[in-house]
Length: 305
Image (cartoon, rainbow, N blue to C red; front, side):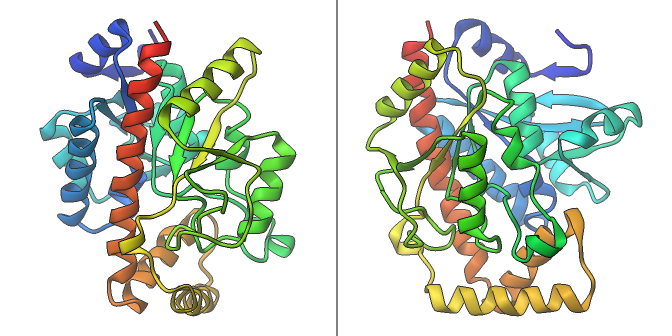
């Protein structure tokens, strides 16, 4: 294996045994929530995956080494770490060469999970085409990664701060299957629907595993996006969240926040504007995606033998 990649013994054994594994990103820990809330949520996400029959593999970079899975002590230290580089695909070589500590985004987690042989990845929401992208050209590296890394990603759609119709158009152009999980309506991260209809949907983890199998048989590269709506009891009012997003975007423009800093800034601003409601919803959808991710991983492990 690559000398830059370290596996926990549990993950190494699970890969050999083809046991169900769910990859997890680490940006949500370092840039999504403050300490110790980030550690509490990270542990709860890992527990949710275990409770549903799979093994969690949190992915990050520590002092230039890629970690596939973390011990309890490593997870706590990473959650407490202050100076963490937000690491997308383009940043991996740099962070490793500089022996830095880095948190993986959706794009880099997909890449590293694929390298490790992990086929299922649960996250909150993917990045996409930003609002006003026609003038800023701000499009997340998450989208083209779906054409490169053979990973099934479970998310509550794309982050609500994005231009969702343009994001879906871009995914369609790239040939990425977007599958609604028990829905035909593309979820809006904080809301269960957006009014944007999906052509593909699945009602069970077994259906998704069959889709993965059929793509393998056709020797198709790239990944699949599973759009899994937030649980109904945690859904936010669409008018309230859109108003909050508009206010957060105005604040970002005033402070001239750009590039990779825009998403964590907007998520933090939303949490303040909504008096913590957005963070509660964010946690709920992440846990729900972890549950569905574990179910898919278990189903896939029965096929991939």
